[in-house]
Amino acid sequence: MPKPDLILLAMEQSPTLDLFERALHAAGYDLAIAKSLSALENTLQETVPTLLVIAEKLGDKSGLDQARLVLGRFPTLPVILYAVNHDPKLVLECLRSGLSDCIFPPLKIDEIGRAIQQSQKRAAQMGDWVRREVRRTTSSLEERIHEMETLVTLSRSITASLNLDSVLSNVVTAAVELTNAEEGQLLLLDESTDELYMRASRNFDEKFARTFRLPVKDTLAGQVMSTGEAISFCRDAPNKIKTAYLVYSLIYVPLHNNGRVIGVLGVDNRLAKLPFAPHHELVMRVLADFAAIAIQNAQLYDESEHERAKFETVINDIQDGVILLDKSNHILLINPAARKTFGLGISELIGMPVLEAISHHDFTGLLGSITDSPLKFHEIAFEDGRVFNSQYIPIKAIGSVITLEDITHLKMLDRLKSDFIHTISHDLRSPLTAIMGYVELLDRVGPLNDQQKEFVRHVQSSAQNITALINDLLDLGRIEAGFDTRKDEVFIETILRFTLDNLGRQITDKHQNLQLTISPDLPVLRGNPIRLRQMMDNLLVNAIKYTPVKGRIDVILRSEAEQIIFEVADTGIGIPQADQLHIFEKFYRAENAPKDTPGTGLGLAIVKSIVENHAGRIWVESTLGVGSKFVVVLPAS
Ligand code: ADP
Image (cartoon, rainbow, N blue to C red; front, side, top):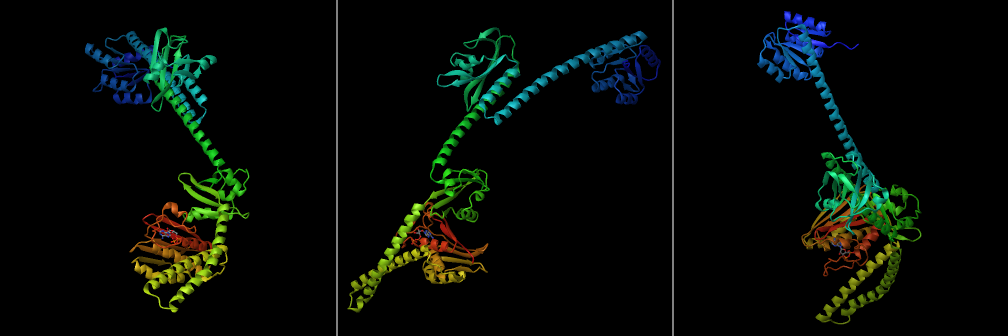
């Protein structure tokens, strides 16, 4: 059995209250009675009645004001005001305030029942209307949510999928479904014929869609193409919008790509005279943007694929080995030439730590050296005689690339050249010694005039230069050939101080400022003291020679991780970047070496050979016009 309706009576104790009680009991209602304002408030906190009857006065408060407050909280609650006098102004106030009725004495029992029933009926009607409205708004909200969900799913599929066909077909399907259209199509411009063709479609005959061609000129789609503006309409009579068929209603929106219109997204109704809703155009615009982004993505992907394929062909075909590494030295790419160099076959190497894939001693040395120095070149020699020049190039945001150039034949030529120079030097030394001896004897066999003495000095100085050159060549030959096997315990600081003592005069003559820093507790070195002195001497002579008067020369001798580090930095003329690669080669002089500064280009070649003979490394850091720094790292004994 349904519960009887609860009527709340808000009035003070009076015969009228008794009358209401009787009338409402007789009509079968449940009753709640509030005889004061606080009682009314308490009752409303506990329960919501189906109707409220309130007296014009409750204590000293206005019943109408109270009724307004209650309606503010429960807008659909029917409220009847009981007034003592029939006052038309009060009735008007009641109606304006949203009360259902206003009743006056004399009251009869059946009148009370009728007023209550009528108010309840109106309230029920109002409730129905509110429910209907809520349902209508909810369903339209649900539709919007569905639209949003479809759009979000589509936008995700655009970024996730590289399959343009399926993305565009999804866009057209969404357009048809979200606008409740009969059919939809995505037209793209064929620039060669100035026609539109159907790139994707929904509910069109497949063959029709495939062969469909629409001229841009004099068509609605063409108008969208040229103005970049959307078109939508709904007509009573079908319109001929395409050469092939008639439609009642339609929406066409442009596809923009890089400021150009590249096509049209359209939906239409051919059979039913159904209009599109105003917001459908907005939905279509969003979908058109999705399609345009997908097309742009596909174009960019095609372009990058094309570039990648080109790059891959080049990398695969070049003679030099190329290994691309990420920042933690894992292989990203290794070309066939590099595989062949290290005999790696076709095994899977991508993603592997490079030192795990390639364990060659010299290669490990190259990677080990890059962490503590900007050394960029390294030779990798194989037991079968092959020699490769490897270059390490850091690449921002990726890692690094290592290239490997086969220099076996150059090495062989270099050896031949060295042998030849060695032989010639030997052959030249004996006649030179004879020349020097006879020149020295000249003034003993008879007096020389001043001019003859001057000529003899010239001959002596030139012969000394040639002797120095030949000595250098012979030294180099000896060091390179590995004849220089002497290894003693060497105190490198003593050697440096000795060298500097000898060069002190030259430094003072040029008013240069020498700064010497020697760390205490340098480890002992095993090496050839004569050669080590030659190495320091050559580097310091260069610093003095290529640094102008009053320049500064910093010499540092320190140790780090069982290594001795010797640095000579100057504020001299610097070395051009391109020359830095070659200055350690024999007879090489940098392009900016002053013509009037004597030199053979052999000094650094000797230095490099000595350093390598002591299992060390040498490199240069230099900025043209600012200065140069030569760094030698030698392992302690
Ligand atoms: P050289 O006898 O010409 O000095 P080196 O082999 O000692 O021959 O040096 C090779 C070249 O390197 C020099 O000719 C010069 O161009 C350059 N070079 C060497 N040291 C320095 C330096 N400290 N400052 C500028 N250039 C230098």
